[in-house]
Each structure stands twice: as C-alpha cells, then as structure tokens.
Image (tube, rainbow, N blue to C red):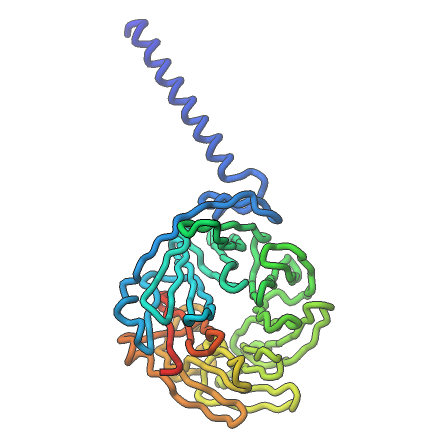
Length: 404
C-alpha cells in the first residue's frame, strides 16, 4: 500500500471519529445530564421544575375533520379520527367548543359543537401522551407521558397563549416532579400524588407549579384523587375485588382529613360538587352502586348498575347524574377486569335522579354510532347541553347533544 493512500485513509478515519464524538456530545446535551425528566425535552424546549425555559411558536392551521362536515348536526357526533389523551369543554357566546390533544402526536385541536369547524391550534409534536387533563378555561392542560422504560411517568403543565397576530400561538410548559401517581384539577389548581417507598404525599399548586403546598401524607400508597371543589380533595383507595376500600376528604386549606366511607369492598367513588352526595360502587361477591347522602346519613341503592368512572354529576340540577351503563351483566370482578383491559362493554347513556331514585335511558349509543362504545372520562359542558366522552376501545372522542 502506498504512503499516500495510507495518509488519505488516516485522514478519513480521523474525520469519522470527530463526527461521531461530536454527535455523541450533542446528543448527551439534548437529553440532559442533570437528572431532569427527558421525555418531552427531546421534542419540546422546556426548562426545569419551576420555570419555563422557553416557548415554541407554532402556526395555526384549519383542518376540517373527516367526520366534521357530515355529522355536526347529529345528536351523537364523532369528534376525532385519531385517539386522544383527554378533552375539555368551554362555553362561548356561539355555543360549546371542545379542545383535545391527540395521543400519538400531541397536536391540539379545537372543535365547535355548533358547527363543522375543527381547528388545529398546535402542531408541536409531543409523542405518546397517554393522559391529559384540561383546566384554566381550556388554555392549560396537564399532560402525562410514559417513557420508553414503561415505568417512568413524566408530567407536564402546558399553556396555550395567543400572540398579537392571528396566525400563530405559543405554548409554554413546565416539568412537574417525576413519577406522579395520580393527578386531578379544578379551575386553575392542580392536586397530585407522589408515592414514596413507605408512604404517599399529596400536593396542591397552581397549574404553573407555583404556590406548591403539601396537604396529604399517609402510609396509604394506592390512591385515586378527585379535586371536587376549591375546598375539598376526595381520595379513594384503588379498587380491588373484596378488598376493603376507604374514601377520605382532605381540606385544601388546612390539610384536615375526614373519613367519609370505610370498609367497603372494591370501593370506587364519584363525589358531587357540593360534596353531599357520593355515588359509590361496592365490588364484593356481587356488585352494586349506591348514593350516600352525607347530611341525611342515608344510603340509596341505584339501578341499573354501572361504574362511577362512567358517570358525571350535574352542576345545574341537584341530585342528577348522567352515566354510561353497560348492556352486559356486571359481576364482582367486572371493574377490576375492566381496569386491566381484560373485558370491554357496550354502553348506553342513562339519566339518574337520586332524589326520586329513578333512571331513564336517553341514548342507545351503538345504534347511532354503528359500533359499540365503552365510555370513559365523561364530562358535561357548562350549559349541560353536551356530554363529551372517550371510547375506551380506541380512545376516539365523542359528543352527545342531550337536548335533541
């Protein structure tokens, strides 16, 4: 081999090594070395735990959903083609609008329920958001992301902000503590639980992470939360068949804890906004739902049987709630199996009146949808004209006009 050829090969190899080293250094810098969550940071220019490090400008584009033009006048409407992670409603003068975030891409859309309009208001990619809770009049959301190890959970607070022009928005975000086990929201406030090695801790804060305050500490680690109103957090032990469950109310100001229900096998709950009425499921050898009236200290059994997770209390009509009710027979193992994804249901929508202890069927979902819908995350619009929910089978988003 000639001396000239050896020199050329050496130069090429040196250049390759320099490029590889440079790529490695840049990759390490982008992933962070300070122990902060990675996840979104590779796709979104967020800062540390307390303050945003930057924002991203995005173009606002208008897209009419594949189903939007055809079915916006129908009683039951399919709002999304792709799976979503969560949605929120907002009433404006013209009617009700819905914002949602796509599960796979993190793109944010706004749908008008009174028209065929669907606007994509963010095209920033945030891959694989598995859960999202909307707050602050649909201008903010808590987005949760499961990392590649399928164990680490990153939680982010995202805020949409309009700028002076009408052609773009900005999104800013902050990183919440890692491995939050449960989150609930109310107004502009957030409650979240962190599981420690031998206990759980609960904190409230503004949606931007400020004014953080601990209000809960307990050896009980497996809990689900509901931010009921400005003064009350409801904490329920995670349901398991024949395992005694407990419901606690925590005062958001003082941290005072009250036990409301206890020793109920397989307990699952949904608390009304005034905290007086509590819909709860008992999952023992048999399964049943009841309403506990705190003032009267009375219990009323309700039929047909469903899960509190499929229900939402009315804020306009006292003691009324709307529930998705499975057509299938429910037994003592149904809720646990449903949680695990071992079974699914075909639901209809019912209206329950707990004062008169009556229930009426208001929508046969599968007839209008042309498919079975297994309802999760039901919410009512502020004017209570619409019930918005997701289908557990494919995470698509739907709305039901309750006035039609």
